[in-house]
Length: 193
Length: 108
Image 1 (spheres, helix red, strand yellow):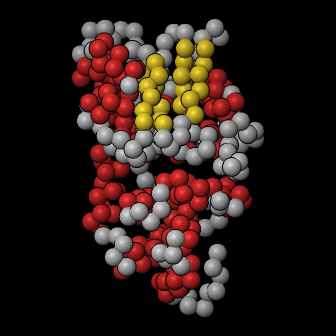
Image 2: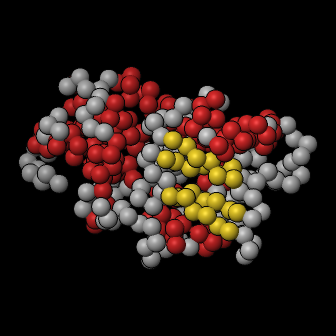
Image 3: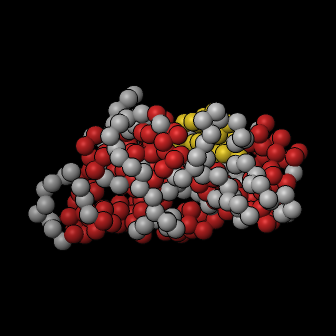
């Protein structure tokens, strides 16, 4: 509908008016952009997952009350949301979607990728999750159950992927590298070591 | 409220398009649009539910035509206008001034 140049101009116009009215301060804008570009992201969630794989007590706390367990690792909710972590096993595969918009666990995964916010994913993750998983190259055994979790503003989900076979000797720090953003959304598995 | 945003189970949107090594923002204005919405929220001019509802009230054809952060921008503009913080006319006047096209009367 509008080109990126037109949108950029609309954003600049709004920014200039809000700055003039004293409703926004330039450093606050820079601070928010820096937060989302550099400090929030799946590197945080990967540490949570690696801890859960390494520490059974932490894993139990994470599955019982993810909000508190994640705060325990220093990642505060950005929008005051509650978190639920669901565990993938050989029998149950979980995937996360936000059919209404783009709700995503910002503190642990950052902003969602474009595909997560796109109509095809929002539509089909709900009705054909196995088809979506196949599109991501993730084959799920016919006898395994697939569970779809529809996020909302107040409650956001993250998947605890299965710890990959062959990773038994790795320590927590090495495990972090196996945990991808997509594996915490549930559309793929964690990487093999 | 159902509407165009309520996409779960809808058929016909085609394959999921993915991008390798996707940047957090594809354009500088996207980060700005997010930041301006969040400062509006932080400033108490509107809350998160009102903001989401504003984006859901974007007319369906437009909702599907514009990009994600453009919806954030339009939602923010709707909220600021409805809350009496910044009128559509004032915004349009600034836009005209900045685009050097003072004759434009299209307030879309």
